[in-house]
Image (cartoon, rainbow, N blue to C red; front, side, top):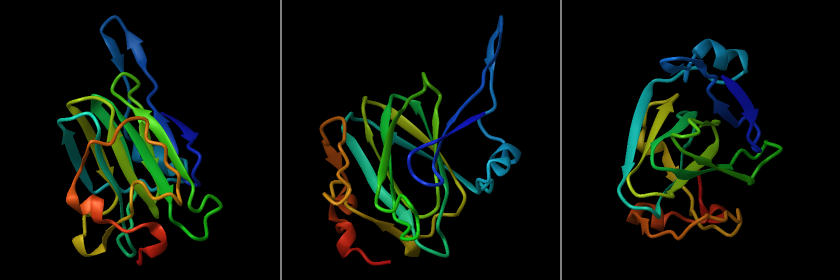
Length: 179
């Protein structure tokens, strides 16, 4: 696997390395040893799938607070998404910056989201499916969110936001949110 820094401290784009032959190709999409060698959290305890029927569906921006902060490894397995992370770690050199990238099954790229970053995405196609590996179990009492359209972060979503659930719509702006 190839690990490329993703503009937020501790975040990486992860790309597979194909071993091709007449049958097609083989590639590793997860290896705890390789993640650990990169200094990344190799603990993954839960996998989730998010299916989104309509283009323009926005999910985010979600995170969990201590002691249940989580790493996410995100991959789009069908359709395409614009995946965004926002650094919420006050001691980070990239505090309050965001990074966005298109994930899709043609590229087979993944985004490693470090602990302390909020995460969300916008579907760019109908019938988009996202596969997450998580370092922490979902803990409802520690789940938090911030506004996907908070002007503090200036995220430029590459399409019209058409579908947002009520919970995500009610999240406060970051300045008003509390741990």
